[in-house]
Image (cartoon, rainbow, N blue to C red; front, side, top):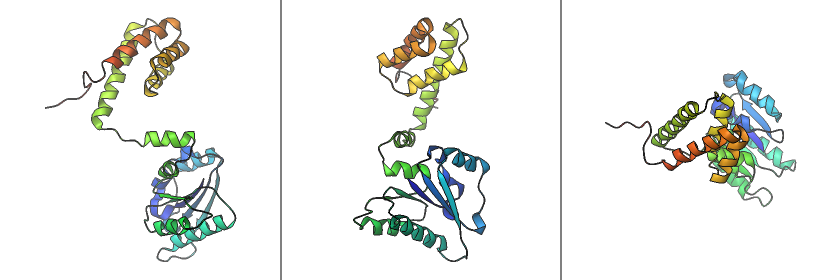
Amino acid sequence: MYFLIDFENTGSSGLKGVEYLTEEDRICIFFSQCCGKIEKGLLRRIMESRCEIDGVKLARNGKNALDFYIASRLGEVFGAGYEGRVAIVSKDKGFKAVQDYWKQSDRCRQNIVLSATIEQCIASANENNERTRKIQEDLKTVTLEQMVAEAGKRNMLCRRIQSKIADPVSEEDMAAVMKILEMKKSKKEQYISCLKFLGRENGRRIYHMIREIESRKGEKRYGIQTF
């Protein structure tokens, strides 16, 4: 995917999701003198993704000047024969007109997505790949009550595991158990995963604890206090 970043508009917040970039992506950051700095951590993650990156600095200040730069680059990209997805990362709704224009083109219809972050653009593009599915799942909202209840369930499981097993459970093994729960596996898959990560004896014991806690879901709102 080709990302055109309106950095003057979004700042660093527009780069949320850089960890999902791959070497198949390309990003171009449009910036001006007043917004020419980026956090080292973000830059490092972009470089680690091995995506192709370049930047365009505004030569002369003017109203909506960077917007015209971005629209011009978009024309260059399509004019060069690019047929993939292009994402305009900006909170400026004016780019909707650019999106509408290219939707009318038989060659480039539906190839442009517009959103405020890299992460949201990937989700909106709705491509059939693992990163899209992961982002779409992560962007789903839950209530704070659900979050607290889920945290309470995990904390209880941790305490029960540590109290029932003679040998200390490593942080790595505990993380594996949490991952098994979070992946919403079937009972059979949970059982096999527990044996795989924790061995036969401890795995069977922990599996039964997981099933006990799962069966109590909804019976008690762990951690929720009402007054």
